[in-house]
Length: 207
Image (cartoon, rainbow, N blue to C red; front, side):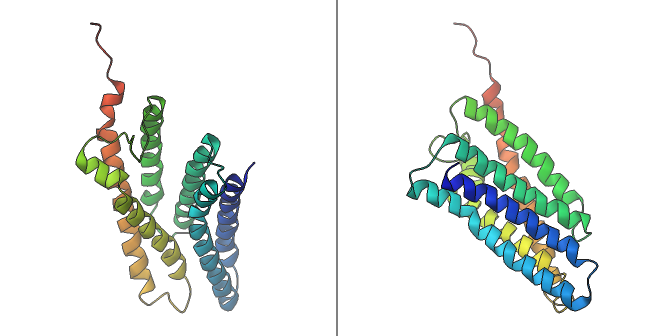
């Protein structure tokens, strides 16, 4: 296993360890609970920051592989779903949020898998998106970067909103806003993939 793949797997393990701290904090005295939440907050920042490290080292060390690309996508999905599921299980967000991500991700990834079998990619020059609107919402760097930032803020703020010194301040409304924005982005960026995937299943008529 090369360096980028090790980073990808390590990021997933770190995310799961971080989320376990959220459960561990629940039955602790207030001060210890806050300390664990702050630790989880800091580790979440690292998990988010490490998202781009695998790609960076893959290019830097010339270790880009098909397995690495698959692991990168799977790792991102695992981290994303783990955070949303744990947040919902702890009652910090509504359960429809992870359900939305689960259903959207399942169908979008299925369409992208079909596109990949035909030589298309999710992003880049060979993107499966055909319309200008679809390319902007799904494949543009602006849309992808903005979506990533909103999700990162949501993960951090949901944890911050549980810390006693921040619980009754700006943190909870800010967390709610970023969670709803993230869910909206999830839906808006997923729909074009589903709507434009019909061409992938057209059967050529015999001449």
